[in-house]
Image (cartoon, rainbow, N blue to C red; front, side):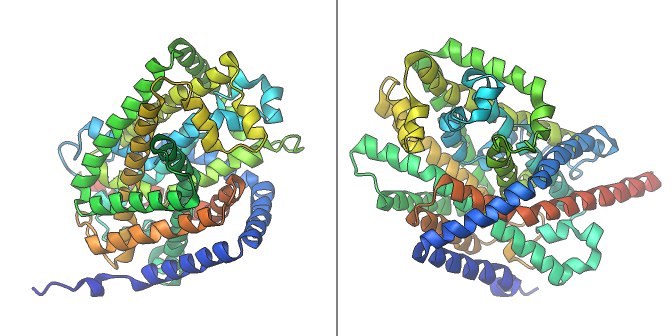
Length: 508
């Protein structure tokens, strides 16, 4: 049988249209930076303020869906007929965590407590010690992971149980929308997903890469500049593009290396900084505070806009996770082959929250200790216009052997970036194919193409020197249509899974 040429297998519209749009947006951001910021701000204000309830309801509802998946009749469904899971639990958990959170988790773990500290809402609720350590766990906790997990289950079921040969958002909607996903509607769904993923990727790179640039500048005595940041971006792109050629084995190996670097960084801060007792006690208290107040935090919308805290922060985070969950759940679904839905849900939460909470408790609470116990005024520095990256450098200056710590931070960030985007290129490349078998990997040349595309938008955002608020706006805007698609996918899963259980029952 004659092998089909790669060009005949490709869905060219899914490749060319996003590339063209990205190039146009990049030009607009670089040529008209101020006007771009203004437009972003207006649209973000409209969606975040007037439609904030939409994002909040999605967050609460998706958590409920995942729990129902795990503890209902659907929990026993096995993703393929393998006797045992494709990957051992530790390897599986490490791949989930390292391919999902990227280097963002290091950036935010180190400084997020300080972002909240000057908010009036924090003082009203009980002060910095109690709530600046709790809110990061809330914003990066169960609701964040629920978006990944609910789609991972839907995609895993679609790929491993139903054996679908299209690994796309539109295909996951087929049980509800039927043949309409083969036409214009399906095309709109897939293009929306691709655009959202590119926006999420850009936000991630643009926020955290300046920290990496600052760390390398300080260690090696190189002048920190936009040029250095872009060189680092290109270096990261080169690393994960190189790993592309090793496929799933490369991702697995890189995830393991990433986890070792991550654990080493945590140990360095926890035991080297002299604040072990404070870090652990504050973390333990924050978990208790979160459990006690989770429902209230999840549903509070500040209707009178006394502080607009949920609009400025919580809504942004739910939008951010919605954008990011476009691709990563496909990867989680693929590597969950051989697991039950219950195991996928509970294991996903377990590994995800364990890694996330550990990072925020150790890295975040060390910085909080310097503020609360030793008089290092990080919040004041930020309030006066200091950059978040420089604030993190001030925290690292309090650690012994600072240069070693910064090298460890830089290596870990590059490893996180490379692991995450290696997995993302694997998934997004699937969109470039008309059809792709569940056990088939995309061509390495296609993955290399997307590796290049992923790096263009962040470079434009860094060139235009967008603020955190503007970067947040990119995610909030992109997430709005994605939320609707997520609801359709979840409804499609329940419809198809119910049909599958009936089929299995009739055969027995």
